[in-house]
Image 1 (cartoon, rainbow, N blue to C red):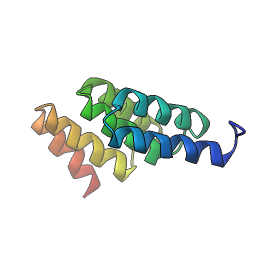
Image 2 (cartoon, rainbow, N blue to C red):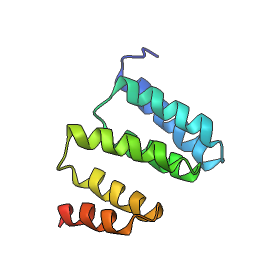
Image 3 (cartoon, rainbow, N blue to C red):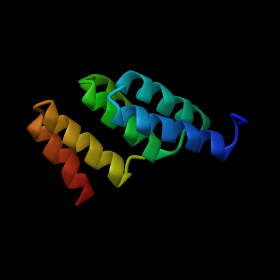
Image 4 (cartoon, rainbow, N blue to C red):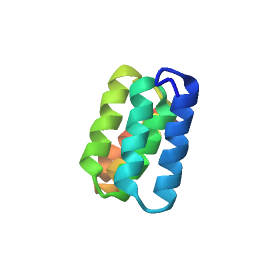
Amino acid sequence: IDPESELYIKSRMFSAFLLRQSGELERSESAARQALERSPTDRQILLFIVAVLKEREELEEARALLEASLNEEPNNERLLLGLGALLADLGEEDRARTVMHRVI
Protein backbone atom coordinates (compact mmCIF):
# COMPACT_ATOMS: atom_id res chain seq x y z
CA ILE A 1 0.00 0.00 0.00
CA ASP A 2 1.28 3.45 -0.92
CA PRO A 3 2.13 5.20 2.39
CA GLU A 4 0.73 8.45 1.00
CA SER A 5 -2.68 6.99 0.21
CA GLU A 6 -5.91 7.27 2.15
CA LEU A 7 -6.04 3.47 2.18
CA TYR A 8 -2.73 3.38 4.09
CA ILE A 9 -4.09 5.75 6.75
CA LYS A 10 -7.28 3.71 7.10
CA SER A 11 -5.35 0.43 7.29
CA ARG A 12 -3.07 1.82 10.01
CA MET A 13 -6.08 2.99 12.02
CA PHE A 14 -7.84 -0.34 11.56
CA SER A 15 -4.72 -2.05 12.86
CA ALA A 16 -4.50 0.43 15.73
CA PHE A 17 -8.11 -0.29 16.68
CA LEU A 18 -7.63 -4.07 16.62
CA LEU A 19 -4.39 -3.84 18.59
CA ARG A 20 -6.08 -1.66 21.20
CA GLN A 21 -8.95 -4.13 21.48
CA SER A 22 -6.47 -6.96 22.09
CA GLY A 23 -4.63 -4.96 24.76
CA GLU A 24 -1.51 -4.27 22.70
CA LEU A 25 -1.54 -0.59 23.57
CA GLU A 26 2.04 0.28 22.64
CA ARG A 27 1.64 -1.24 19.17
CA SER A 28 -1.76 0.40 18.82
CA GLU A 29 -0.27 3.80 19.60
CA SER A 30 2.53 3.18 17.11
CA ALA A 31 0.11 2.29 14.30
CA ALA A 32 -2.03 5.35 15.04
CA ARG A 33 1.02 7.62 15.08
CA GLN A 34 1.97 6.27 11.65
CA ALA A 35 -1.48 7.29 10.42
CA LEU A 36 -1.17 10.70 12.08
CA GLU A 37 2.18 11.30 10.35
CA ARG A 38 0.37 10.95 7.01
CA SER A 39 -2.66 12.97 8.11
CA PRO A 40 -1.38 15.42 10.76
CA THR A 41 -4.55 17.51 10.93
CA ASP A 42 -6.87 14.55 11.54
CA ARG A 43 -8.10 15.22 15.06
CA GLN A 44 -9.94 11.90 15.24
CA ILE A 45 -6.61 10.08 14.96
CA LEU A 46 -5.06 12.40 17.54
CA LEU A 47 -7.92 11.76 19.97
CA PHE A 48 -7.51 8.02 19.45
CA ILE A 49 -3.83 8.34 20.42
CA VAL A 50 -4.81 10.39 23.48
CA ALA A 51 -7.24 7.63 24.52
CA VAL A 52 -4.53 5.00 24.16
CA LEU A 53 -2.08 7.14 26.13
CA LYS A 54 -4.67 7.49 28.89
CA GLU A 55 -5.08 3.71 28.97
CA ARG A 56 -1.31 3.41 29.24
CA GLU A 57 -1.43 5.99 32.07
CA GLU A 58 0.79 8.37 30.12
CA LEU A 59 -1.35 11.35 31.04
CA GLU A 60 1.30 14.04 30.67
CA GLU A 61 2.11 12.93 27.14
CA ALA A 62 -1.60 12.94 26.31
CA ARG A 63 -1.85 16.44 27.77
CA ALA A 64 1.09 17.66 25.69
CA LEU A 65 -0.52 16.34 22.48
CA LEU A 66 -3.84 18.02 23.25
CA GLU A 67 -2.26 21.32 24.24
CA ALA A 68 -0.08 21.39 21.11
CA SER A 69 -3.13 20.75 18.94
CA LEU A 70 -5.10 23.44 20.74
CA ASN A 71 -2.33 25.90 19.94
CA GLU A 72 -3.18 25.27 16.29
CA GLU A 73 -6.97 25.10 16.79
CA PRO A 74 -7.83 26.93 20.02
CA ASN A 75 -11.60 26.63 19.53
CA ASN A 76 -11.79 22.96 18.57
CA GLU A 77 -14.52 21.66 20.87
CA ARG A 78 -13.44 18.02 20.68
CA LEU A 79 -9.91 18.92 21.71
CA LEU A 80 -11.17 21.18 24.50
CA LEU A 81 -13.44 18.44 25.83
CA GLY A 82 -10.56 15.97 25.67
CA LEU A 83 -8.24 18.32 27.55
CA GLY A 84 -10.91 19.13 30.13
CA ALA A 85 -11.51 15.45 30.84
CA LEU A 86 -7.79 14.78 31.02
CA LEU A 87 -7.23 17.66 33.43
CA ALA A 88 -9.98 16.25 35.63
CA ASP A 89 -8.19 12.87 35.54
CA LEU A 90 -5.02 14.66 36.62
CA GLY A 91 -6.86 16.23 39.56
CA GLU A 92 -6.75 19.74 38.11
CA GLU A 93 -10.45 20.40 38.62
CA ASP A 94 -10.30 24.22 38.43
CA ARG A 95 -8.40 24.19 35.16
CA ALA A 96 -10.67 21.43 33.84
CA ARG A 97 -13.73 23.59 34.57
CA THR A 98 -12.12 26.58 32.87
CA VAL A 99 -11.38 24.55 29.74
CA MET A 100 -14.86 23.02 29.71
CA HIS A 101 -16.48 26.44 29.99
CA ARG A 102 -14.78 27.41 26.74
CA VAL A 103 -16.94 24.78 25.04
CA ILE A 104 -20.25 25.98 26.49
